[in-house]
Image (cartoon, rainbow, N blue to C red; front, top):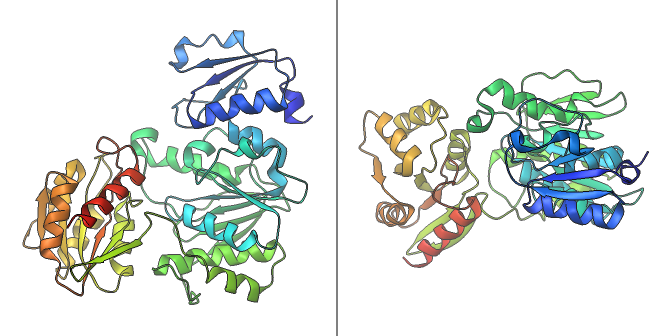
Length: 393
């Protein structure tokens, strides 16, 4: 039974009316013939589950446990197109890897890019043909309640993250592990270094940081050469030859707010790495920019462990560290010797301070190691504000 038939004459509740909720409503209207469609934005306790055949939940809504009536855009899409879907998850690197895979495939195969990186998957429901490849960035929230996995799955990396949502690291990992949990024999699963082992029926390949080739990418960082290994493996599975893959990867220019070069101002180069929400990403940013001197750190404090970053600050006095907001204050207080550490209340103040600390010929990076919420709408708005402040220097 197709998913469109599944919703025939059914009573549907759309729980959450953001981007995915509105997309679901359009999908049901265009491709299905439900008996009724209602919108709800309240708490689960206020849902009369007996009144509906299916409840389509938006990914950002926290729900404990599973229930057969609850589904999601990701679940609906994969029920129809899992055999042609390449799913990508990981704490860090998934957006760039997703975009690079799509960049390599799109000139040689019919391909679409969906999910956490772009448009909701059901927006493409009518565009996916039998031979279309679907490159799907999957967040932990999109994966959490799935009972179907993509044909090709990538689990790039795993670090402590989203504990405000999942409460424990185990819950967070289990959500991401759904990307392979329901794979079958004949499917493919690429698992990154440092990702705990996952039981799967798929052909499993462990990707490591040992002897990584230099792909001569435009984008900075050893971590991007590491992720390029996943891109090469997937593209080969999709029938592309090595020379074509390597040439296409070298023309990929990266994504906004991901260690993105902004401008050279007063002899100082500025980089926007606003996507950075964990300590490891900030450390990687400093290691990736050859002339890095100053880094701006801080945002929403979600209670994650910053010991690795504090240790890095203590061991690397060649950098200047400018902290701001709640998480920045906590890290700053945890640093014993503050000679090279500075605290500012806001990003505006931090940019001014960083500019005064960075000599000509060096680089300043915004790499917050924290979420933007509470101060900015999202990491994009934070990165855009950083650019505005740099332009005004």
